[in-house]
Length: 307
Image (cartoon, rainbow, N blue to C red; front, side):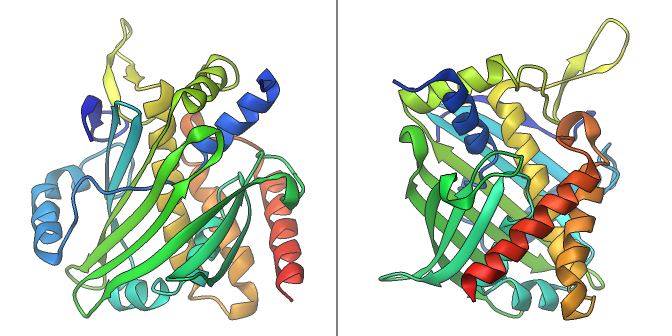
């Protein structure tokens, strides 16, 4: 990727316009991920050492470091974070594609996710739509191929790839790698990216000129005359908001595994919205009660469809 813009660090340091805005909002809400460079256990451990200071001291109030980039027809976001969960729990619970559906269902705009088997790989069928209630059949469908690259005693690597998406977008990728660190904690790298053409760029511009006009990300670009932090906005702001949403989804999923199976869906829904509401300027989209009710309904509909 050629980087024309890049931000690093913590957040204080023939189609109608309405359809375009909805589609662009879907693009902004999609977990479409791609690594700047392939990790391995050694390079990830080196990165953890390099980021120790940033992970300890930041305005996220959690051990997390974020960076984003906009290239020529591409967007990229990366999150490095310490998970307060043992590596064995992370590796074993996330190596199956169905578990990724449990994670990807949590953000506002995911309407359904089904795991199955494709011709050459496991597959996830993900439907992305409006943040409010929407029939599943009206949502955009993306088919991700899933590969569990590594799940050893000291390294985890899983990857999802969708070659095409709505409005001429392409090369959607999700990469997650992880290693065990001190105690019962895990260091994770979550990387995401997608490419886009002129139609996708137009849709994103329509979104950012309307409902997304006042939205910001987490990276600070400086301070205003009153000494208050100014945050990255535009498409990079959207990428950073997604990075946080999916990090929170992974953490909520892992946290819920400690509950009895019958309570895990409700627990991860509640854990995710609690995490989102810690960053209201960036992530607030709807009232927590409305979100919980919507997600419960979507999970129930998905369970009924699978049966």
